[in-house]
Amino acid sequence: IAIKDNMCTKDLKTTCASKMLEEFVPIYDATVVEKINNANMIIIGKTNMDEFAMGCSGETSYFGPTLNPWNKSLVPGGSSSGSAVAVSALLAPIALGSDTGGSIRQPASFNGIVGLKPSYGRVSRYGLVAFGSSLDQIGPLTKNVMDNALMLNLISGFDSSDLTSFKTNEDFTAQIGKDVKGMKIAIPRFYMNDLVDKDIKNNMTKIIDLLTKNNITVDYIDIDYIEYAVPLYQIIALAEVSSNLARFDGIKY
Image 1: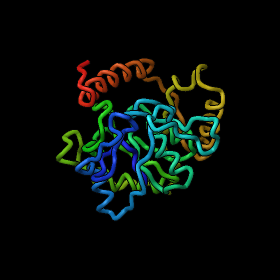
Image 2 (image 1 turned 60 degrees about the vertical axis):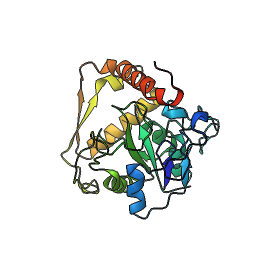
Image 3 (image 1 turned 120 degrees about the vertical axis):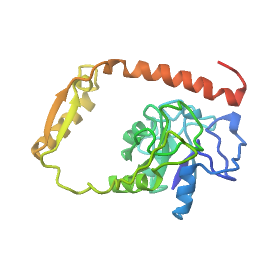
Image 4 (image 1 turned 90 degrees about the horizontal axis):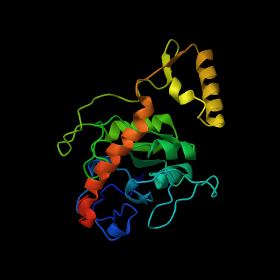
């Protein structure tokens, strides 16, 4: 397994891809790292990222950009760029990333792999260098859905060191492979509007056709205020990161 370089690893550098933490070696493991070690998984290394997880292209690391393994003229996405590339390029079968506003999901998409942002509180944030504390979540990046579910089983659950975490005894592999007939899928109309890239909309249409052919009901829905989701995210995330980064440079924002 490969670990995004914003999760504390005892006696192993954790830089957050920043010059400020270039020589930082934690004295403790993040909770997810403890769980990985207890499961006898082998950490092959820490992965590059956008500095302090602020970015969506993989280009803002102090140590240099992460390259897309499929086409080096394209970005790999971010901020969990190195973790997504490590899995996509077969350097590791599994990696951990963190997601505040798309930092697992977007690079997973750009690299053709499976990435999941768990519900807030499902995975402990203890030992994750904070970006937006009310939005951050650690999640798995894998080649397939089964591996992703197995990893979520391993890393989820309550942690007394993170009081936003909660108890769960779900088996995320339980529904894999079962018949999907009769399910209902909701698609927000807002994400199928004229501003959406033509190729993305075409791919969405193909998926909708596939679902319909498999006896799944697809309904288009409206969600109140969804057009404000991105600006609201930016207000919350930038306010929280300004507070969180004060611990590194001493500046009070």
